[in-house]
Length: 164
Image (tube, rainbow, N blue to C red; front, side):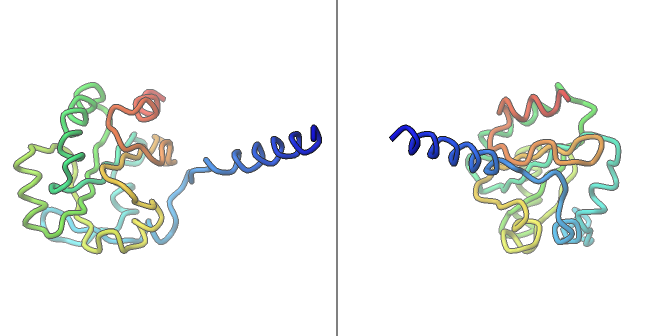
C-alpha cells in the first residue's frame, strides 16, 4: 500500500509540474494574426508588439458588452495610474466596430486599441486559449510573456509581473 501511495504522489508531482507551463513566446500564427486599428487599417500582432519593443506591455482582452470587463475597468485605470511607463494594449472582442468604438468612448478607456475582426476564431485567440474575458497578459521588456493568464486587473500575479 505504501508503494502505491508513493507512486501516486510521484505521478501527481510529475504531471502537476507540466500543467502550468505557460508559453513565454507567441506562436507564429498569433504573431501574424491581424487586427483592426481605430483608423480601420489592418495590422498584425507582431507589429503591435514591435511598436513597444523594450517596454512592458499589458494586454487587456475585453468587450464593451462584457459585464466583468466593465466592472474591472476602474482597476485597470488604477493600474495605469500606478504604472505610467507600461503600455496598455486593448484587444476587443466586440461584435462590431461601431460597438467597439462606442465602448471605448463610453468607458473612457485610455491606451492602444485594436479590434479582433475574427473574434474568438483566429490564430491569436487559439494560442491564447480565450475562455473568459476580461483576460490580462503581461509582456516584459525583453518581449517574453511574463504573465499568460489573469482574469482580474487586481490579480496578485499581474501586479507582481508589472513590478519585475
